[in-house]
Image (cartoon, chains in turn orange, red):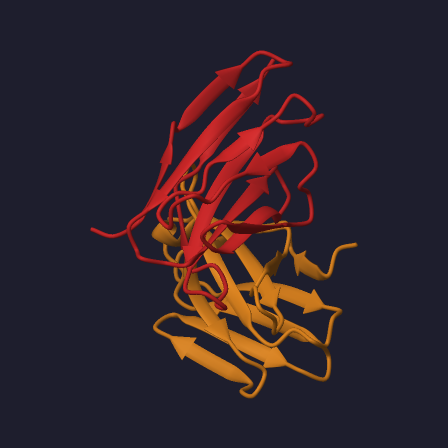
Length: 113
Length: 112
């Protein structure tokens, strides 16, 4: 049972454009929503994260938008650069003794020069 | 520099053999995790450990085993019972009670 659905599977954007990746979740117990960036042959790296008490969080060119009522959250990459080309994963976590993550299936982003 | 070291980067084994993947961290993190990544799929949790000498099964633990004898080390054994072991394996760590924060660079296991 996939609890976090991510779209699109792949995305091609021109340099300078906006990249938008969407995720939807089912479990209302989730209270932490991180995004990870993964380059080929490397492990994922935490990019930015949000909790449901805010609707938006911005760090540099990366912004998370969160819609609690719709159970959706998205990553926006402004002024996309070729160096942003990577696979992006959304994830969700719920309270508990072990903060396990449920991951989306990933989006392969290609930014054309 | 603090971080997670996974070794080896590539591993090849014959079907029917057990194989152990190494994960070492010097971040002083209590919690450690093992994930499996397959093409076009998200990461799936195999096992996790919150403290030394204690570990819990994740979503896909069948065919895998772990140990946590030291805080710094969390080796994963892929046994011959794992039906489809070829995958990219990722180790992660975090402070206890927190989501995985740091990931290693993975071990790509190929079983033929």
